[in-house]
Length: 105
Image (cartoon, rainbow, N blue to C red; front, side):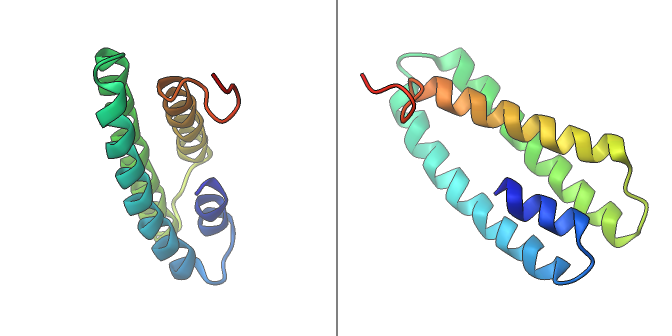
């Protein structure tokens, strides 16, 4: 997902293709997030709510970055915000999953 987003933001060719692949990726991420939520709700409901909020902010920032790129007014701070929220969302997701597949219980 991160590779597709960065490809869409930093290349001038096939930008729309990368954006559409990213949007299909959102569906996969949302589906796996629902599966994770069903299992993590009983263990860490607060962290789960935080992850949902951070993930929505990440998707919104990504879409804002795509729109700004098409208008050719994208800023470095927006790109950094997208990267940071991508990493934070992934880290919270791994924490909710018990760091699987990195640590097997």
